Length: 300
Image (cartoon, rainbow, N blue to C red; front, side, top):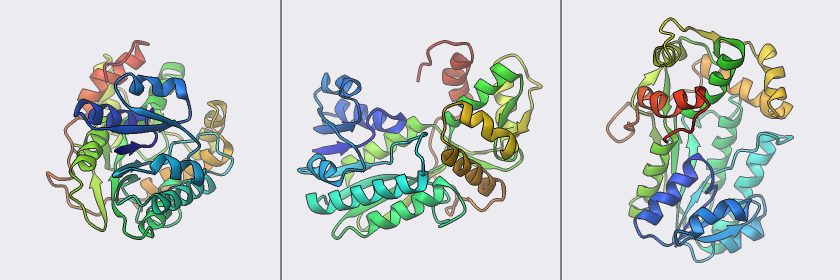
């Protein structure tokens, strides 16, 4: 039995679908029974529970050979770092109580930065908490900047006419498609070839600057001269609040973006076949971002 937390999210859904397609027995965890039915229809068990509830997570993890452990995003969290810590404590307690021997966690490149990097620093402490579970073999997948983060930039472009985000435009950033993270996590959960407490960066196919990303997107929509505009934090925060994000989450995103811009959040591994993933930004733009821009359903 493999347990998948955050099963309806970007990476969790790919993990669950990949494992089911391979004939694995899985239990999916989520906040909505209705949203979990897509997996139940394919043979999964469903468990509805709050990830900050250690008793519920202990029941969810009981009988598991391995767990995919991620912190589901809560954009309305009053205190994001406290929420991250609560999930880490809940998972750590549940993994120990349930006697789980293997786990794959979703973390971030730059998670070696203990403070000053917003939610990435929260993942640093999340890793440390799970590493304290006795007898647990755990692999922390430190993924790059999600391609899906560009959904907001596309929204800004559609409404304001410019392509904008928070980090500086000229800083090379490892960027990755979340589907590639899910595929890799599923493979690790099936093979269980890791021992002890390990980290593995997933850096996407290549580093990109936001300037380059804007040009690629612009070319795809017939605007080859499209440039990138860095949004100052003080100007961006009202827009984030208007989008329904809590003030504290907004502040954490701004802090994270500054850490990326200042090159304090960086990968530690040299790029290799092991940490490079296949989906290019050009492919993601064509299959996902352009349909989103046009108001169509994406193919991925």
